[in-house]
Image (cartoon, rainbow, N blue to C red; front, side, top):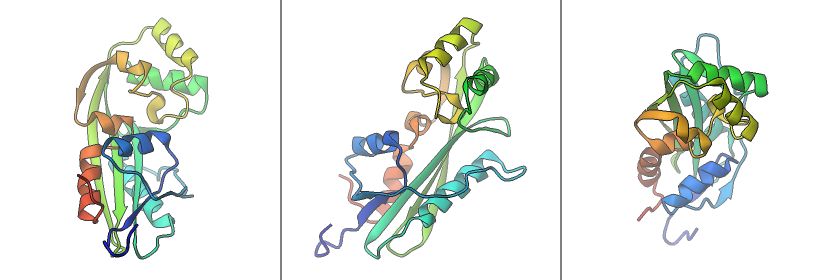
Length: 196
């Protein structure tokens, strides 16, 4: 970025293609992508909201930042009550998750952290409530077989076939995809990243 304009460069501390696509929707192309290496294991009795806030902050601080760079990191998880649903470890785990989500409301939490040129981390947590219809065994089979839920927090991707299971959603849709755009825009603007 031009130092004359004093505009910081954005570093995205995530290799998620979904986050890059969502940033592009608001006209943001990171100057570089970094892959933070942190332990993502939940702490004993850690609440989902605290978990995503801790991981987002940890990811942002794990990335080397030049004086003229702003770092953006995020973490998204699905929670049924206090239970954190991480990425499924295999088809059996995915079936278990879909069974837990069937006919119930759950929360999708995203932690966001922006480290500005002042070096100070700013963290926000966004909560979206989602309710799935009651899933039949055939619907669970159909979803597991398509492979879409593997590698996704909570075992589903709302931007794909799983959207047909959603009977209710309250809050940010982009949050469920992986990056709440309203809060991201606010944090980036406050850190000096120009947005429209």
